[in-house]
Amino acid sequence: MKPIILSLLSVLIISKQCSGQEKYDLKTYDLQSHVKSIRTSSFKASDSAGIISKGAPIEEAQSQSIFNQEGNRTEFSYYNPDGSLREKIKQQYDNAGKLITMAVYTSDESLNYRTVYTYDNNQKLTEFNSYNPEGILTDKLIYTYDEKGNIAEFSTFGSEGLLLNKRTYKYDDNRNMTESNSYNASGNLRARYTYKYDNNGNKTENATFNADGSLREKSTYKYDDKGNMAEAFEYNSYGSLSYRLTYKYDEKKNVLENSYFKSDGSLLRKTNYSYEYDKNGNWIKKITITNGKPVQINEREIEYYD
Image (cartoon, rainbow, N blue to C red; front, side, top):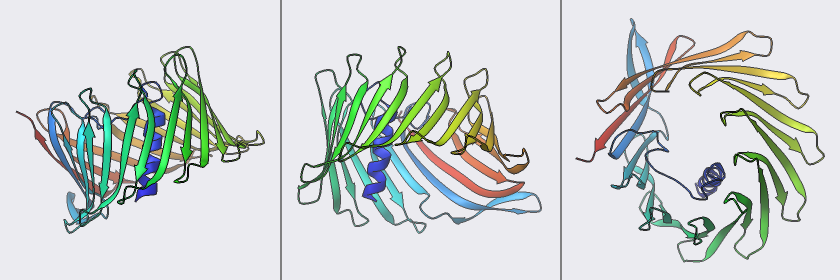
């Protein structure tokens, strides 16, 4: 699972371009109060005479996260449907709460690979080095910053130190990312990404262009008065609408309903969600209903620090 995890980590880092650090904390999980651990299980759902019940566990949908007193995640485990361990991730932090090491283990808890994080004097992440179980370097990611502390460049190197790819970034005066360019190992442009925002800093447009400048795809977004995304429009390479998504939320900003419309305006799919909450305001049960049919039940067992 290393390529998948590295890809996810890259996305997380890019999403934190202004902070220059990677986060796995309670805020990332959108959890309230002083959570110690959370175990999530997902099941298929069935409806019998109007009573929704859970069925068989869903593959790859059982996990547990453990947090320290500061709210940073220190351990994350994937489980198979039978409850046996599939993969485990352990993380360590420095006194400032910065992630300094991450180790990934296989189902028998043997080391798969380890990642070490390095920061500059401004607590900005500068290097991300991954090693195999023998301690041999396999990947290196290097970050540089502009004078405002935004990530300006993100480069990936292979085990022999050769450049694999690079991304550069531009920002507006509010430190919102406005452009990103992706290059291959030879320095040739692969794709360009542009972003637009409203006066509240909400992203209103995200467009991807090919190396020749032609449009690959584009998305635009609208928000409600609470800052929640209310509508999303997806366009194809010709600039024509492919589909439209709408969202509704509860008072806790959890999605209650999303609808998927075709380009002609006809409804393709509508999904509704219902939640049960604990006394701390975190949901402990979530039921997903698509086109009127129950399809999934998610349950969370949450343990809190005293």
